[in-house]
Image (cartoon, rainbow, N blue to C red):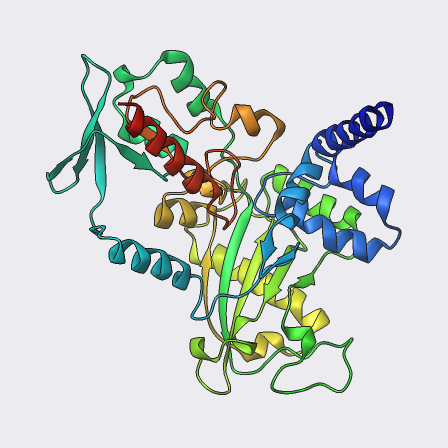
Length: 377
């Protein structure tokens, strides 16, 4: 019994160390090589306005690598046909179960009975009203409670917590079409059809954690990083359905790009072009002639992500994954069980526990809570 208690003590202590520590401390404790540590560190900062020395970034690192795919823990996989195939598979299963799906139907308001505080359904932009005693929102907490729910139906403390939560982001996504695979200087016996070096995540511009920290500090000052931190994937090497023969699709997940620039604006085409070319030039250092292989690209900065997908602040996790917004604090203190102050309204997106990532946990957990509440009626 004493041995079990001692083991639990050390396990708990290690967990809190991971929860509170910066990623740099965790990685320095376990690894020696600068390049390896920097490669792993990107998972601690991707999608966040934080650096490797930010307290709590150690947990974000864990959050990214604790997933499981195909029975293997700590790995990820491509989806045939692109990420949209995930949504298609979910919608197909829903339709087979009898669900009616309506697209291109923007919600203008969540309807709430001011006398009872119960949800009544949703109103659409075109004036249509859909009545229901249960509504689930997978929009961001800010979008849900500030933009859609009438303010007079929410407790002041709750609404204040939602408004003041951290939705900052420094992530830009660049989707690139190329007429040739990048050929990396470090690789020999290059296969023009693609080799192992093209099939996983390729890290560019992060030779050390110090380099990542410099990139973060530039963004904290309102400037896009001089040497951005880039995660490159080339899904078309494995999935031939998403690109024509001889051409490829390349995804660039880029940090750091602040939502609001100290100089210039992301709406300025010249600013956008300059940053994209900066990223391509950095890749050229590792894969010569990459820039000349680009035949087209699409760039989504934080303001673009907010406008196109409703991601408040451009934050891909529906809110920061900081120490003050995890577990019992997500999306606000006292409201981590997917229920909300509006009876019958539930939060089921990444702004709910356990947070962001393509895992479906918030939705599954929220659905279970809804079923329990319906049974209790």
